[in-house]
Length: 121
Image (cartoon, rainbow, N blue to C red; front, side, top):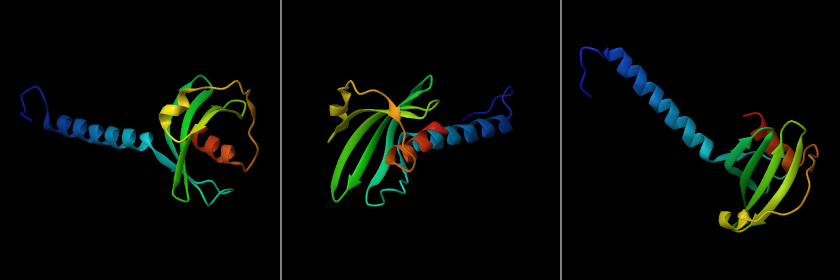
């Protein structure tokens, strides 16, 4: 980086530090583990999420006993409800949706722990 008389070196350092923080934040948001106390035999990870209003669309990877599969759920963070969209062995198969309605999240269930993670973000 070449310094000019209009750019103070401290400003460049601040910009570089901010860039590093943003990179760490975005990579953290891509995939993260979620501890599900009611199911210790399965590893859960949020692999994608997007929010529109009160609804968060979440894709979860589950791995247990050398098997991996994916779930896609809609979480209504305001009303603490969940809608199961699909379950498949690959993320591409999750594009299909079903007609299931939202249902209440049961305390201490898998959905409870996933919602606790995604709804507080």
